[in-house]
Image (cartoon, rainbow, N blue to C red; front, top):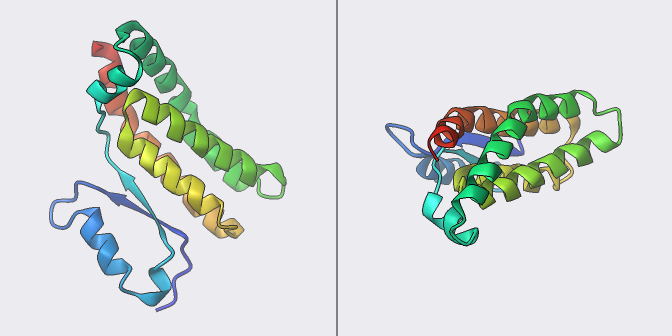
Length: 158
């Protein structure tokens, strides 16, 4: 079965089969071995994030609030990069944005979002064609969109 995909966006908390089991089954197909897995979950490891920031709650609160504001526009930025592939920098800009999300999400303890952005960044590094770039950008944008409500709620209470 030929696959024209370089990444797969999956929900970690699916009711019947989690994304890890589903991905293992998908990877049994020889053509699917190289597909990047982009997992979605809005979970935040607050304790690890606070430890990383030396227990400074104000620093965490400010970082989270700024990150949430930045995240609001990132799905549309990724979409714009994907739609403007005729500009040489769009692919690199999308990869840099995913790298930024990966790092900032890790800093605030949004490990699933960080992992998804890292997977997208890695997939972008595999020289995807234009159709694959659109798919990768859409998938990472979807993960960001799904994570936003949880991060906004957390931002309101920390």
